[in-house]
Image 1 (cartoon, rainbow, N blue to C red):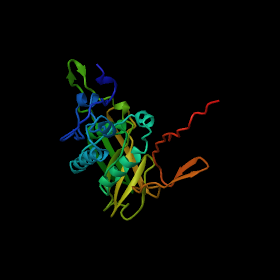
Image 2 (cartoon, rainbow, N blue to C red; image 1 turned 180 degrees about the vertical axis):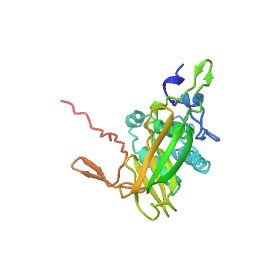
Image 3 (tube, helix red, strand yellow; image 1 turned 90 degrees about the vertical axis):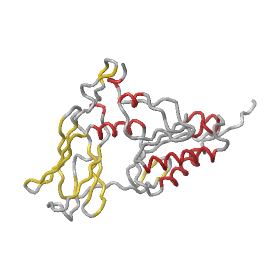
Image 4 (cartoon, rainbow, N blue to C red; image 1 turned 180 degrees about the horizontal axis):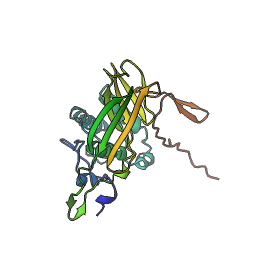
Length: 262
């Protein structure tokens, strides 16, 4: 009954050995109730792994397989459990290990909803193209719900396309166009990434909220291009800034104070 009303959800299950489910192409039914790949902190606490190092190494192995297979790896932990256990520094050790495993691989880090949205809009792409007219270069794509008209137990599996707010990444090559050798801009794009040699990745949102075509104009110009470099974070008297656009997560670092008897 829930399928028509949201894209997907994650249950509390996870894998403790062997290959976890890293495929980045799931069905509508699977997306509603998908197991995570690991719950590394919990797996150490409940004795699944004898040591933290063993647990992190298993997670790193699943990450490696996801990278090799263009897959999707996810981990889950309750922040309050680490807080209550005074173990928030686990985040530092865990994410540092993930950074090392990813290295220079082409990996995008996202929240669960963003990952699902991108998968469904990617899988709904029916046509992608570009054309040049009067010294103007246009990019277009068509969204068509591949689940439209299909059912499970009498329930429609249509994708709620109006939920898809995450931009889709489209790679283009301006070689042979009037934009060859020039910087480009796109007012509708969330961001643009330069790959060099007249190759670009345009991150454009889907604005219709239903099946159909979206069209964007590319022109000569400059704008702030996406950088894959880690942002530099500055804290000035409690004001947090970064040198590049970034998604930040803030958590409280517990300070254990001795209770004073009055």
